[in-house]
Image (tube, rainbow, N blue to C red; front, side, top):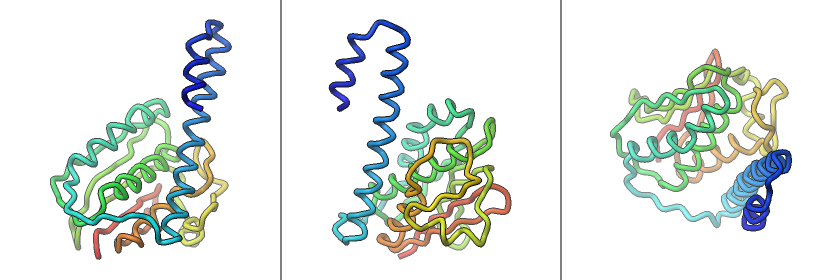
Length: 197
């Protein structure tokens, strides 16, 4: 689909047609990301997802993922603030990448425009990966239900509507890795992945 779309884009000259093709490309990327979430959740539920635990240096991972998503954040009027960490944790680097991307994506979609999304490691009581935003947050009473596949809160921010799988995916990956995943925050949302197990 991407190949045919790129061939079509090379032939278009009319600005209105180019704009439509660009919107189609954006929709294709969103659809591909959502299908990836569905397939990952299915493999985790079936127990067929490959997990390779190893010593993962967090500095390059955090830098790469925040760098990849910085332009998307800027386009949405948000800034990702990374607090660097040289910590090394026992985890799966591919799965950890997925969790971090899902959490930052969620923050971009829900944080207030012009505000920062904080990404970093809290070391008190064991290392914890934190992604915090100043969006509408999630009431304590709704934090369990929002982890269910397809669950969405009506008050959610200004970003695109997805399938409601991002936080569910994070919870399933954390469970598979033996880590703890929690949601908190009095103002906005603080997603925390504790490296245990």
